[in-house]
Length: 274
Ligand SMILES: [Mg+2]
Image (spheres, rainbow, N blue to C red):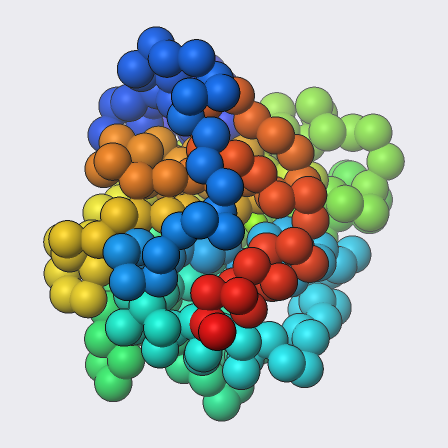
């Protein structure tokens, strides 16, 4: 990719099915839906994890999973006849560890991995692993930005700056050049205090499309709940497929509604399971 590309791969909100949120030109209030009114038999539920089901922590490995959450998710999954999947930027193997012994359908690493049946292993949708040398170069690069830290996801890297000072623009510029220099089909995406280097053409939206084409999701209305700018591909896809999109933590124009915080999402998932 060109080093001139904008930082956010999701800029414009028109990726995935090329459908912006306000595609119908209707009044904002007309498209609002109260999630409590949704019927578990009719929806396919796609849940982001960090910042949506779980409260954000200073580092990804420091998140806390409420002790009753695995049971809550399992009950909801049963009521939805299995049509519930986690859609996360984390690798699926990390999701399994977080919610053990529960093992849900899932897409991981921003759409690069998918598990569409409970008993199957997860499948990588790209073979392009980044070389060890690139990882070492990245670690050297971020030494210039105190407080940042990186995650190696195999097919991509994440650079977090939640604990860093105000060097956001400089960090983004340095990573843009870094990605340009790798000479691969990669893109740099901006999330909440994170910059992700990820394979181009795979995202949470493509993952939702794959799930919706198969049982137990096919024929249901997709509902995606997520908290981050990086989730726009998933929002776009859910809406374009005639579904609903809910944000967490802030209200966004064009979406179906929002939850004030992860606790509210957990409470709603709990109600779905009853
Ligand atoms: Mg999130």
